[in-house]
Image: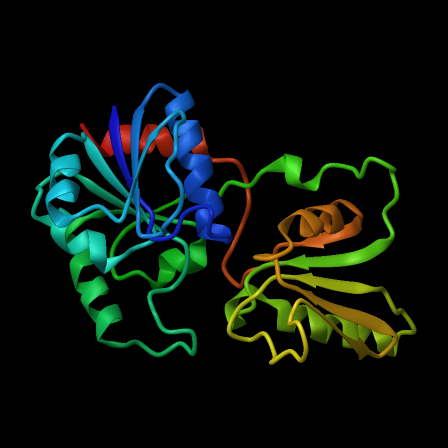
Length: 267
């Protein structure tokens, strides 16, 4: 099967959708599909298991669509969805979150996206995301890389709790802080480290790379994963507990399941 995988963001950009899109491109290829990825993220040329086109022209995008059996959007993006609808190929959209602004309101872009959903098939990463869609969907959770959470080489886990995620309201970092406040009332003071970046990141003084504040006796550390990804991986492996929270996320490794479902949609 020939899959055109559209991901507005993609490595070297760092984030959840970037990671999921890369994993799916690799695994779909290993399962025998011919995969072509298009993205708006600039970067170096890529030579691997799949083809990668960065910021293709509309003409090139339509050419790639006509040469595919199915179009898979890793999160909905109007920049690719609008021209690809005209290609009249089966389109599957994987929804990684609610179609709304960060504050929960809907702009004209969100209303347009929701209006276009009726022309596509849909995958939701959780029951909550599925419930927010105005169309039927199949719920298949996002994949993750177990190797990212392997034991540290020295076997030392000196971080009690590590939060990993984008700093937006629906990722649940605020819920963790409230839970820590409850633990403090019971006399428990675990260390707490945050790995991530996002609009809820407070303005940082100085270099803006490392900032700590006191949360009771717990240390809250903000780490910009974009600049310090290797150090973030080291921190995750030293954690007694790693939180990858979301108000609407569940986790498994669904690539084969998603691949079979794409094959069904393309026939």
